[in-house]
Length: 113
View 1 (cartoon, helix red, strand yellow):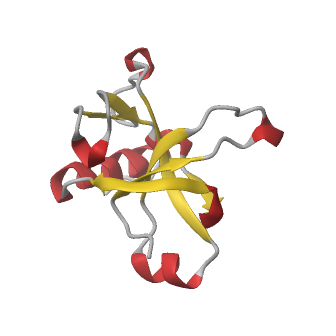
View 2: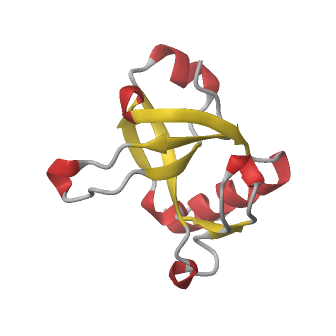
């Protein structure tokens, strides 16, 4: 079963011009993941130039099984078909790092806790 905080490789959505497969962090809760054909994910990039404070989170190499230092693009939250997760899980993001991801998502959608 796909679980919250796990890191997977997501197939790019070719119809939308996204041809690159990307690592992503599953952010949807486990109950939803079990009962739905989709999961909610935050994509990651290794291009560190894309860092934006408050809505993106820096991840160290090795976190969640990532092969390089990366940025979680929390402002690009997406529901994707579970079948588009083509490899993984590579690992799990720590609870403290995931809390940062959740805060960045909240900031990106204008939900200030």
